[in-house]
Image 1 (cartoon, one colour):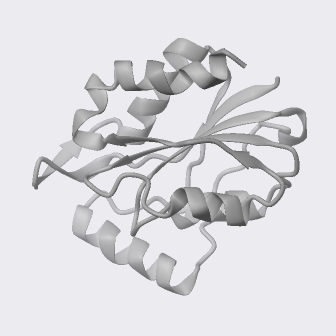
Image 2: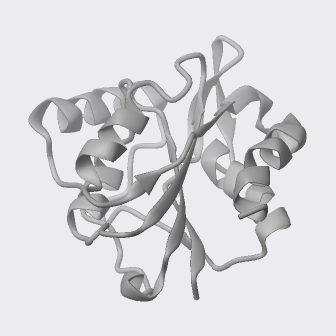
Length: 172
């Protein structure tokens, strides 16, 4: 297993097109599934040990506190030996300008030496934020490629953007 997709996503109430709406599949998971339609590689979802609130305002409050206090967000163990993986497509929603603390917890628990990371994120206007710089800092020894930011409210129309982004990976 040389290539995998690892992502964190949140369903429930989200902010889409300027208003709160409930979604059954998180935008980042939807994007990960679309990416995997082209890659056909194993996928792993980071699921927090303690579920995030479904309500958008409560989620904002909790995620802001996690970021401010740099809280570790524990996740269910992945059935994956990351030592056997060379390339990781790493997906997350952009929360507070970068990746959520659950992604940071995952990053800190693993060795990134000689790994290749293709980051992708969903957002509602802030694109990748500082996540590329943060990944380069936090994943010491890894090569971090250009990221794919997709507006969550447009994720179902992202096929062309995904194909264009994957060209570099497919042609290597």
